[in-house]
Image 1 (cartoon, rainbow over the protein chains, first blue to last red):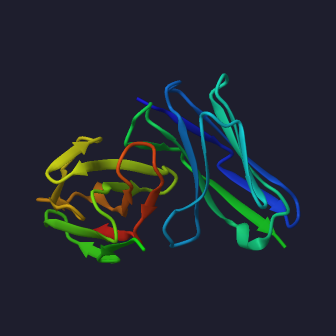
Image 2: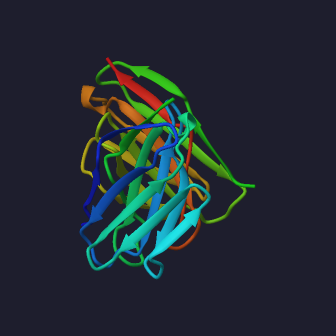
Length: 113
Length: 113
């Protein structure tokens, strides 16, 4: 099955700096890669996703890049704010036509004012 | 618009007692339904998913079971809880078909004592 590794597990940045979270996956047939943000005590919510026919996608201050050859994808957050502090999870579909998402273990991002 | 309801929000149960967590979705038909467990430092672990009434796929062998008696209802059960069943349980739904965004419920914090 699919295996997703996520790094780093914790990340602290100064307000206004950028943050980068990286994930690798094992199943070359996976073709859907969402990112979720989970604030303390709340449910995970989708912030951005990318499909295998796209190499990069941006939405305001966040962007995701995908390298299918290397089987890794990354989340980039620019101009971080304290409200960006949360746990971020990457995920990968478990192969083409899959109903399952395999999640990374999460990155706890702290933005220091 | 679509909404997902999950209850109860918190639950404290003794070892050996039964469990029933319920999840319902409104505003959509034939959703894919999921049960995840979130343990500290271990990300989101898929327990069960269902693509239709009565269709349950199990990802992790354990003393939990799931049922889907109606199109938009998903139930997580156990006959006898173990201490290791403690955790944060999340129900989620996604649109019909594979590789679609998952929307999570508020979660249930289960403590087995």
